[in-house]
Structure formats: C-alpha cells, structure tokens
Length: 254
Image (cartoon, rainbow, N blue to C red):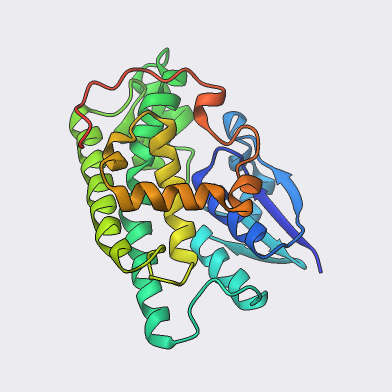
C-alpha cells in the first residue's frame, strides 16, 4: 500500500488532507509541488490532475483529486479512526456542513490570501501580459485570476469575501453551542475542512472576524492542540512565514 500526496505546504486544501492523514496515522510519500514556480501547471502534473491545483492523492496508482473527495475517500478506505458519524442522518448533517464550507469559506479565504500576500508578485505586469502568462494558463482558476488582476482584488471583492467568512463563523458559533465540535460530540471531516480557513484568517491578521465568538475561539484552540494539527502545519504552511503581507484597506468585520 502506497499513499502519495502531491501538495504544497501553504495550500489550504492541502492542509486539510494532511490533517486527515495525520488523524488516521497514515504514512505517505511527500510529493511537494512548488506553486511559486507553477509546477502544478506542468504537463506531467496535469496528467494527474487536469484542474492544475493541489492536492492530488495517488493510492496504489489510483488517482483521487479534490480535497473534500480525498477526505471522504480516506475515511472510507481507512475507517479507523472514523472521521464521519456512523448514523446516516448525522452523516448527512456532516455532508451538509462540508458543502457549505467548500462553497463559502474555502472559496472566500482565497480572496484575502491572494490580495494580501500573492498579488504583489504580479504588480510589475500589465493587464495583457498578466492574463497571458498568469491567468489564462490555469484550467480551474482562470477567471479568479482575471478578477484579481496584477494589482489585486477590488475593495468590493475583498469586503464580500470577509462578509462570507463572517457568515461562516456566525454559523459555527451557533452550532458549537451543542458541543465541542461542529456536530456536537463528534469530531468529523467538517471540522477538518474549515480549519485551514480559520487558521488563514489568523495568519493574515484578520482574526477579528472570529475573536469575539468565544465558542469558535475555543474550538480553534482545541484544533491547534490536536497532534494531527501540529503535524499537518509543517514549516512553510503559513504565508506570513515567507511573504510580506500588504495592508488591507477594507474594514474587517468583528
């Protein structure tokens, strides 16, 4: 049995898969993908993952893509310890959380991440060259990059993403009234999926979004205390470790 993970330390989607692998005490072959060099767009990688993003899991030669799909795959193939409820109704509740978390905070956190840390890489490019060399070469994120442009996202786009993150922590705060985890007593894939979004808001200096939500604050502390979290967040996992974050000119919700 061989598990190979194509990933990048700073990728939030890679982080959630690394947490799950650590929770299940699985050994895996580290296939590091350098996003700064666009290695995820090289032909050999696109044969594995035509979306041109990380992560990609290869299990005994079988390719699994999309981070949430990988999480469910790991939980089915390696069921101990379980990361999803045994009861079908509770499992459906977990999956509803998963869909919300992928639709809202996972997408929303990309905007301030790129705006504050990554867009500065492209400031010297004009719009035409940026589209040709950076945006249009991306199978999945072409229009995301076009919307960002070489100067970063508009204030409206940043404000909208922060509003989505605020909506997420408000929903989490309400759910955590019933227990230490999003599904009460059950620690599940839902908790794993939202962790990188919360950690990234903290790394970007945006923790005001959730700092006044005591249940979310306590949940984040519990997540950080788990051995799997510490294993998953290897050196280079946080943007602030290797990038200078530019100031944000949009009010942060609180």
